[in-house]
Image (cartoon, rainbow, N blue to C red; front, side, top):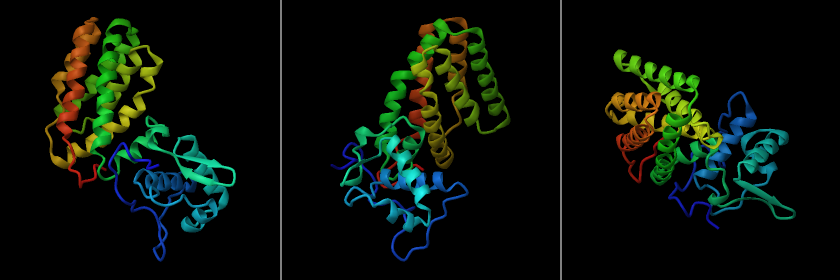
Length: 257
């Protein structure tokens, strides 16, 4: 089964070594370097039409030890990308089995070519979750949670005044609202949101899109602080929709990485 039936993907992954090519550099931490190389290759569709190689072959390709290679394969298995069966070896699982909210998996998908569909579908999930989280924050947040939202909002304002990139306080703002919902399931969504905001930030910087809509963030902060749950929900819906629209839709031949 094609692991990428749900999404269009690139036919290959540039980070994978092949015959006669110089081995890629994996960085200081070989296990995580190999994890990201192989994970990116799987997400890029490199193994869609070929069997996943044995660990000994991967070790030879990347110049790593068997123990490092096995650990990387074990981590990919835990993320749902791979599975092994006795006498059948290791194979790539369909996309529906992957831990799609795992930040590594999400990043690998978003960094491939033809990934506009991935971004669009993840933003649909954000639109379903973040406005509700803002509503619950307005209803149930502890004062310390509201303070974290206010602190992140103040940092966004400072960045706007000083012409600095607001990405980090923007991520903190969204994370603080998810935490303030007092719903642990929403709170665990924050890392995935942060990953998508970083990718969207790259698009905004590359395309020269206008600065963050500070007024929308101010409206969300004010509504949550005053307990206006309808206003909070509406403001956050506008923020998420605005972020998606500002980023635009990458062309089908363009990587959003």
